[in-house]
Length: 75
Figure 1 (cartoon, rainbow, N blue to C red):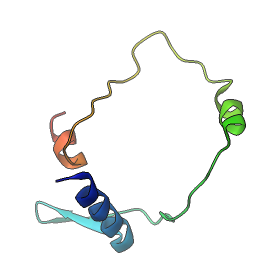
Figure 2 (tube, rainbow, N blue to C red):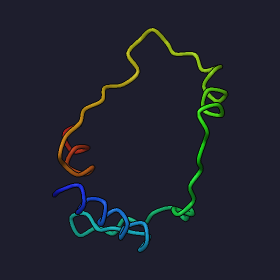
Figure 3 (cartoon, rainbow, N blue to C red):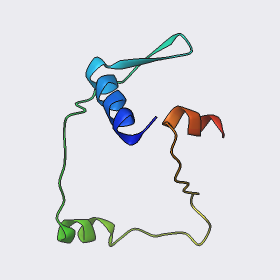
Figure 4 (cartoon, rainbow, N blue to C red):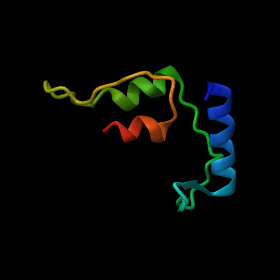
């Protein structure tokens, strides 16, 4: 699935409020998925200035060309 198809599927899922996976209906929590918050670089710096990053590895990031469900299935 290409990025445009993934984006369209995501828009449909958030608009419908659910998706189906292996015949099972998964209902999303009732949030306003259209809400957007925009932060200026200054506000972003203010928000992160007190964050303490531990020395240990926090997470592993992998970029793939697959949907979220396929990627999550590998873990």
